[in-house]
Length: 455
Image (tube, rainbow, N blue to C red):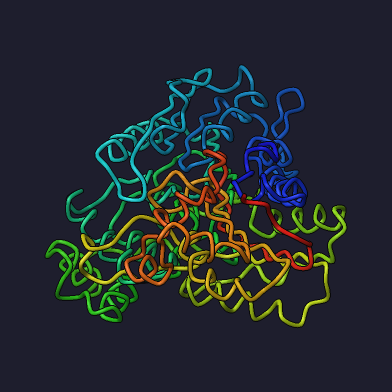
């Protein structure tokens, strides 16, 4: 993805725009999924090496996968494994397969995100069927990336009930760790279920979209031991006041599991994981460090402040501005992680946006008092929430430009409608789907001179 993909109106009119765009582009290029897979997967004759571990004397190789980056990851596997690949299935977000239905012997499927859809269930059934047909002397390669929790689904409750629960969890401000703890106890493929289902050895290549890279949370850990319990899942619902509000089937499943009427997901030490290899191939840390290196080349004092940023998006935005007060200029401060937006219960009254756009909107008023600065937010998958924008750009002039159009940032923030605030300003980042996903990045550029000329 080239720097030109990241030029909003403010960046196009700024002499510093190309420098900023190159920093954003470097972050995304560093976690390009196919390249990430190739760094850890190679073939020498009849031997496959996964992160240096050799696999020999297997009969067939199968590929299964899910996530927003699963198509380019699958392409890399097909290229490396070649004719030894017998077949496979991977599931990506609707619209990201580019109209293709196959890559060599691998079937491409699309499904909905962030809410699971029937297409995802059908894909989960297809993967389960492929796994059950694998032999003990075969090898199953798995590609996993962000979005996999919604895309790879084989629920033990109805799809409607699972969608209702997901909506409730997203609206209450639950973290991705908490949401996926629930998902793992309501699905046969999550929480180590995929590994348990395969009679063949499993090697998983994982692109992280979770802060801190806990493998059991990424895509709800289909190939990883599950440290959580049914009781833990129930406590999360009680924490957010949802225990009596979730569908009866969800509450009943957790009650039965907590009473020991069904087995817990496989834990660390379970023999099933003796034949499983999990490899982290890309992360937010890698994207942030690559952005830092590029910013340094552009002449900034560049620093990755954190890759563990969590909390309410609007609060984190102002925390970032405060962090920049004591920074020597010219500087580029980089923040990675994944924030949340708490909507409340009446979803129909809210506008359009995502956590990155909301973070940007929250700083508009304060940015008017920060001269020679730029604030940029970026969802690394290119899509922030249910929108076609990855984030937004804020300058010291954003507030006055908005006022000239009759736009009050406080009003838009109150209804979580960041998209419709930044859209008429031309400052939504719209690079398009990046086909990767390693959480979010925020950038504070300081001491860069005049930002733009909007006359």
